[in-house]
Image (cartoon, rainbow, N blue to C red; front, top):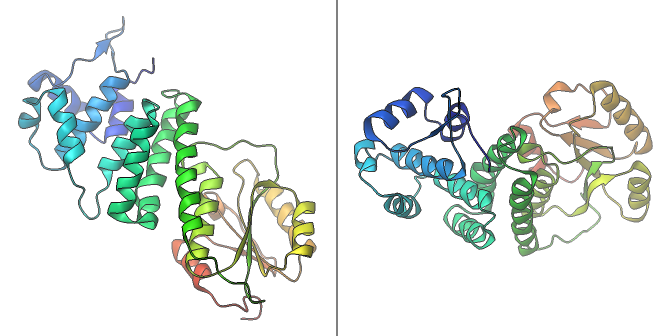
Length: 306
């Protein structure tokens, strides 16, 4: 059984520990277990219950009204609630619950409703990446096992593949074409925002949506394989994500080697650690900001001569 401290619950629900204690004492909303040291702890059912309470409270329900609801009524209200234009917390909470229960039909249904409500691009940016970050925090802190994080990632990747296939395939006419990959290395995907394949697939989706032809190579691609692909399949740009466990020295040497191997192509990279990197190589470009990524998506064909 996965157990949570009151600080874990605070971080996951957004409700301060002090407020949780007051609600417990004043409204008897929940009854946490206690260790021999008298410290509170919570299990998965407590977490799901508190996620619903937090969502209803943030949606404007008074805590005194929530306290009068049975757990079944609370669950129904949470499921029936419609998110505001810029508030998708309900979907994050629902996906968290479904992941903890390893409930694939429910997870798929929530994903389907989310995309219908917000569209695929907004769903990824506003819900799925933040959700995966939350699951990642749970995994790193030992509150969910690796299977929960893998379960969630796999279903989202499946949804993303369907979305990519659903876009019209851009015709390659000898202009811009982007090869996407992550570098080879002795590493493992981390859950949440550090999972490499999801943001790479999302970049492929966005490029395809803009009508840019792509070659998707996926994870862990060695340089010699990239060279072979580039010899057989012309491309103008190579885009990759930074591997978290490459230190600055490794990354600089990698970029130098990469730059010398592909002098006629533009090498573009980004990632969570991009802001920590510096690059002065002629044909290498670092995308640090959202604005730079948007510009990359929409730029013209002659990227090296512009």
